[in-house]
Image 1 (cartoon, rainbow, N blue to C red):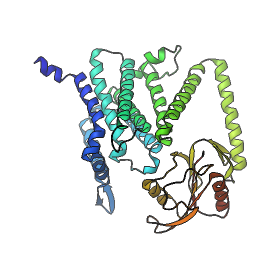
Image 2: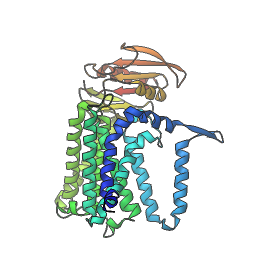
Image 3: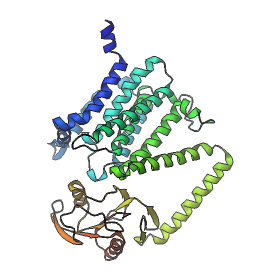
Length: 408
């Protein structure tokens, strides 16, 4: 009986699940789970002339069944909390793997969120009976998840056909926070905010001892980590990702905490107003122009300065920070082909070290675009020259997708 009790211990379950998280890369490698999961998400059937993914249909059926079974426990608060969870999924998907072009319901794309969301439940089940305060449960769940994910990624450096990926650690971290938000605000119906939604605390130590501010700061930290690890995904940038994440988080926390004092609040507000006014002035001044300035590590687009990071400018003029890379693969090419009609312009860096991976390394080449069923011109130039070409083509009214490598 004692042995059976130990086997069914929640702590043992956490350890066993953590071992499964470690083993997942091996299983995916040896048993082709990754390909199978990707294929499963693409299976669909026709319904009233629409193609509906089986995964999406199953999710809708599961959600409907859950609503029916738990209808007596449904409250407006829990519905709003569930919407917040969905928004966390959407925010993560819009921030990561942009070139992958995954669907919202893609299992492979959501794998990290599901796996570590379940881990949060396992940790809660193991720690709550020990009568730990909610803040301690939130803290140790977060720290343990980051540790396990980091060790997992480091081990993958020594596995054939696997790579160390900081973004995967960030996804796992975001997944465990999704799980904790579900636990604290859906399952526990927001008990951690029963004394109010106050985030700023009088003392630094209070942030670690008060559950809601602690969870809030973890979410801020995790999203900064998630965002920058996705646009600096190559392993060579791992130290840069850590430095940027820690630097921005410390800056955010300092502003948050010090703004409790009136002098700091006034100073921060004044700085924010000045920055907004200055940026608004330059945006209005250059809104009808395109690339205003480019040099190593800095591009000014429509009056908006963009340092260091690579940039993707869509044909409609909108832009976003993109994955910083020197070599594009087949998946990236498919992404480009789906989003441009006639011209793909690549700024290969100030020294031309980027822009690799295309059929030829010529400055101009033509390929067949199977998505648009027409020819696509690819222009690869050093970034300063490409910026001049972009301005000229846009002034001529051409449809251009522009990818800028903002360094060398």
